[in-house]
Length: 472
Image (cartoon, rainbow, N blue to C red; front, side, top):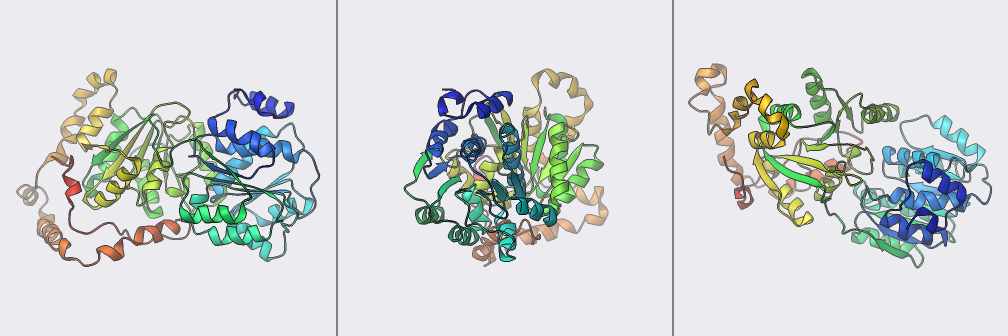
């Protein structure tokens, strides 16, 4: 099947061909004809499957007929983050270059004056995040009663970020007779309820098992001491065949600190997280795409939807608190049929999170020590010349059992530390705070765009899970 078989216009096919595509992905092949027939759609598909084009392409042809009116967009696309909204806008510019359609991007972090000016002229396509849209609607700057087409993208991410009430309110302000397309990587009960309420006789399309990891990605868990994370990461970045990498952290403060550390070590790295303004975030992504920097340190704001080609490695510097985030993080590599490698650093505190990840993806992930991960990551042809450089003897340091005898001699000022650490471990099982701590990650994750909370990990007794492969 080709795009020409899907019923798209000649102008659109020309733009698609010039972009280098000729064969639709499964989600595109199934969704595009139905969207052109004005059907409501529920699309279950992971990022990286081409789902953005599955609604952008038919929307362009549908909107080619008709005229826009001031402050009354003809179609609305809701995205959970600024980055995803900006990417959808890029798709419209790329595929719609032979159509005279107007578009506005309504997101936080950029000038509201420019956005209002575009809306005043009238737009065919409005791409927005729920927060900024509700803000302008509350000020009376936008009307939605002329919108005949609605796309809710990354619906499960919307749920995670607390946007579902906003989406429900937005839906009530749209015409009852409209076409609605909902896309999500998973279908939790809340999203199913949302679809039942606001979609009319939708066609359901599912192109992959929800929350499955790509078979093109080699996954490894790297056992590390929490105090040795930065050293281990630095060694792996130098020793492994890393052409470009995305490094994920759970907190924005960790992203900032790690990026500064990598830059001091001579790496070409950049950072992206919720505290950086939109212009700077777009500029940083462009630097990464262009290869000016080949390492991008990111919070989960960059985990979903970002289509960055050629990422060879993903490092989970912090094990993700939610298993779905693991799938979306490692999905930044191994895209479009290419192979990729994903390393996840794990400490004793990450046992519960890793157990949940493995239950979700339905497989055990191989556990290796830091030195083993570095050795296995080296290209075979480069292994021989690197051996004399003396890095491997240093990599063996994490294997030392307990540095009680050596520490007083090597670092006298720190002689009192081992007893403190020992006492902490002995008392940990008696802490009664296991249940309350389980909610902390969810609160933290929803607030990624706002502030950084305490580093609250799992602090219960060491479970049996840690026995699988956590050997010296």
